[in-house]
Length: 127
Image (tube, rainbow, N blue to C red; front, top):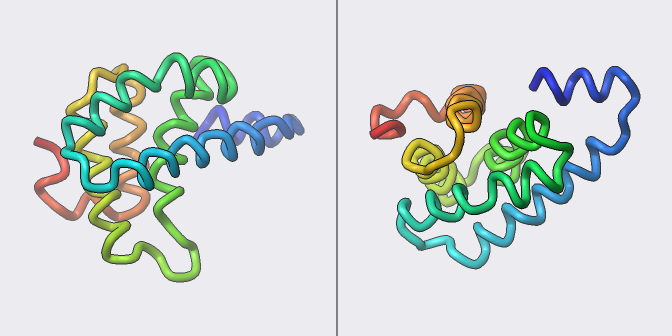
C-alpha cells in the first residue's frame, strides 16, 4: 500500500478512479466466473496484470498494488466482513494468485493482502 498511501498524501485524486476501475474489473470476474476452477482464475489474473491493472490503474507499481488489494477488498464489507460465499472466493483468489504467472511483486502483494484480511489462517491458501 506504499504507492497508494503516497499518492493520497500527495493529493493524487486519480487513485480513487483507479480503484473504482479495478473494482469493476474484479466484479466482472466474480460475477461471470464464480464457479470457475482456480486454474482459470489464475489464467485470468496472468492475462489482466499488465494490459489492465498496470496500464489502466496508475502504472506499473501502483497498478500491481491496486490489483492485489482491490481483488480482496471487492469481496469484503467493512460492516459485515466476508460472507461465507465471499470468504470462499477470497481463499480461491489467494490460491489463484499463487498459481498464476503474475510477477513476484503481485504474488507477494496478494500474500500481504490475504494476511491483512485474515485469510492466512488456512494452510490450504498456498499450494
